[in-house]
Length: 332
Image (cartoon, rainbow, N blue to C red; front, side):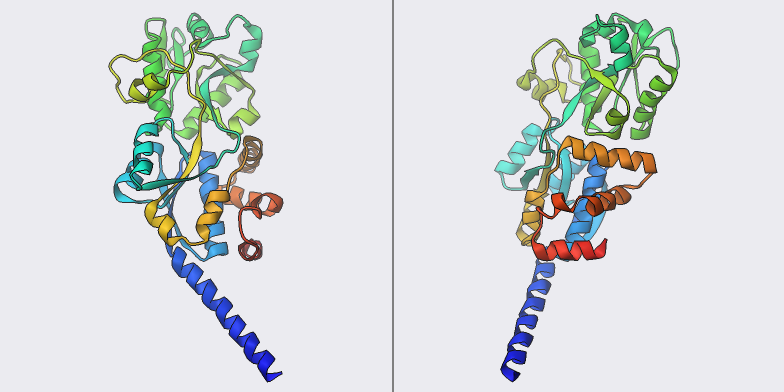
């Protein structure tokens, strides 16, 4: 019995030491909480799992695509960008990965991401002749600007988002101004969402940039328009995604990818926590459902993350080891 107790005590001590080593290996971790819903919820999911399951000390920092990438590339901070849409930073990201500063851990959206210019489906149904962006730009009367209904409006992204650059360049490439369209700055994510909601409430036309997965595209039925040209990657990288490109050409959005990107420093210190980051991914349908719940319940990103973790253990427990899964469940 004494031998059994001694061996049990030793095993318990080793287990405790392993847990402490795991926490020490993970240490302090900073995560970019981007200011769009799917990325914000992903950051909160990562915070809960890394903190509760792996003993990391997690800090969330406000993020946007371009400034977050630049900071990670130049300063190795923050440690993790859970959902980095890479179309605007593909070339410098490839260089950073090749040179060992950054690591692509996973493609967080398992079935890809969708970007483009959209119109309400009720308008597309009423005007079946509108199939392309060029078709829509022939009818500024169908897309009245909020400040001047005599003009059409193309709704742009908030400042700091990579889509603000591409939308502005495509607006110029199609000479939309001479066709009677203003480029409208929506000011914020809430402003962009509100402009779509207002379109459906008033049954008036809307055209502009949007993406999936989002609660908005789950709530409001939209039709994505073609740019009537194939995607030209070279032109996109050299111009469409470059601020103030002098001579933008009409281009189609590429098949979008959203990656989880981590710094080399995090990969070196994270230990088994890195295995979770590499395994964690989900699909558009899953995310749209979470975001719809968040929108309907006026929940925070943390609320939505906890809703996901409480209601989908069959999904997230596959991303972690059994010990971490037990700790996370106990903390919820």
